[in-house]
Length: 100
Image (cartoon, rainbow, N blue to C red):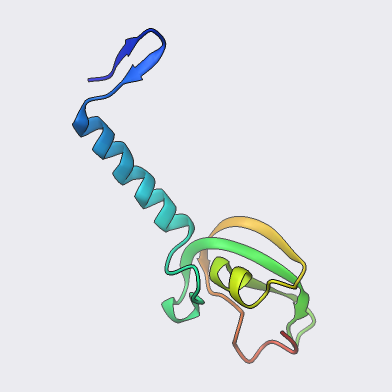
């Protein structure tokens, strides 16, 4: 049960643990996998997506990359964050790229 005391929120230990678990779930859904690895091998998953405007696919479209690739192999690229998307598979490292 949450109680208010002098505008400060007071939580029971169980409420605190429950909130922390929820935050961990949300963080994993936003940034699945490890930060230094591409999520390509995980298939189509919910994850944070960035568009790499520097790397172009063979069909002329821009490529979407996962957060891990954005900080490991696209550090010098022009990136635009699209936030979390459902059923996205990272384009980085596949045969559709013309440059990287």
